[in-house]
Length: 251
Image (cartoon, rainbow, N blue to C red):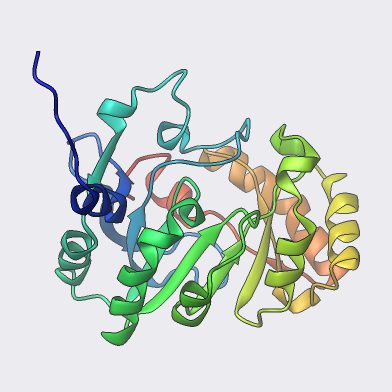
């Protein structure tokens, strides 16, 4: 039996690597498409999908990034250096990047140098987060826009895990943070209104989106979600990628 000893330098090197989701081909889930949701919907974008999440939403459509009871992490996850990731992103010659997951903020210490470097190269960088982990100083100054998607009761996640008051307040005080709520039924609006009032979130930064992974579900949900947006002066978003391509990885 061979015993491998890893020194501090080697441990530091591994710690700097970032865990990504794999595409079905085995390649890292870095791809060029259109932003399908939120404030910048329809914008040509490079996506970087990271692995791992600290929540377990019942309707999550990227469970392959965290649900190890049903997915094999050896098949679904790979680790790359920030320099390798940066090279792959820049190869698309696109100035708009969305970092999504999973929950990207779980890896923000390793992620921050990459984000700072890409910012210096002129990229507009969005980070999609569930709003339970506050950004570090480096991340806060490098990220162009935060897409905060706090989870409601419809996610099946206990409130103590999905609502972290100090983090809510932190994002509510960042002008570049937009709050997107996933709506499963009309009564979800009561919970949204409570959170918006509790954390003084400006209405113009609140976005409602119908939950669903099929064209039919999105179209049906859009009717009543749009009506709620009109009534409460919130913004509406569809899920453009679902309407165009269906529930597929790398789109």
